[in-house]
Length: 122
Image (cartoon, rainbow, N blue to C red; front, top):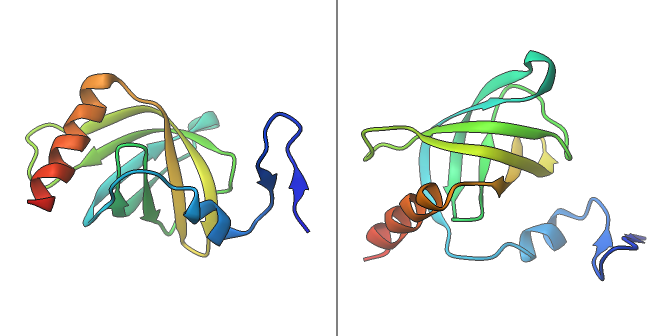
């Protein structure tokens, strides 16, 4: 049984389907490189599986844990410059796959993601 977060109406738990159902926004399936950088020189490389303006799903050989925070660099295929995310929170982990929520992203970077998603949906 999930426990209740006293600061919200959402239940806390490891139920991935609940977390996945809470995702918002349009998502774009793609495959691109992602580098993540955490505390104490923790870093790794991953492949992005899908992307939205609020976060992404990725796969990595480097093991991460829910609750970790990272700085991200995404290398999108159709972009000249990498996309930088100042802060992302690992929301869930299942095997090598994990979900990131972009908790610190500059408006210009969020707009770049939105434009990529909208162009791909045309």
